[in-house]
Image (cartoon, rainbow, N blue to C red):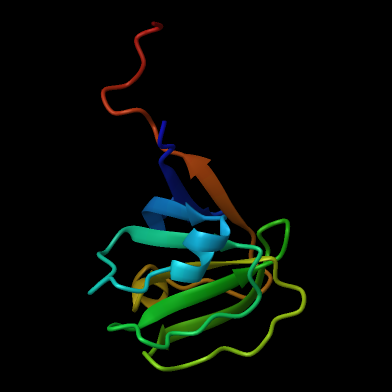
Length: 129
């Protein structure tokens, strides 16, 4: 079963990503967004056990938000272009990769801000079955 997740700031109901995928295995973490031609609005990738990223061989820019174990924002990169490498963030335990411009468009995220990952509501609601 494929669980669908969304990413939100704790203080608002704005979706930073309404279709958040998880990269938590060696293969999915290594591949990340490589091989994709874009990251559509609303999508995002949560790379676990990650404190630095690169955009080598990527074909598009991204926004990146590094967080600690409690999903508190450690560092933010706006429109990280292809062929770049971030610095090592020792306190970060994972990173959210979002379409470039997402953070600015949705009002931004600040260092120290708390983020939440939530399950998506089932399509069609629940009927008690």
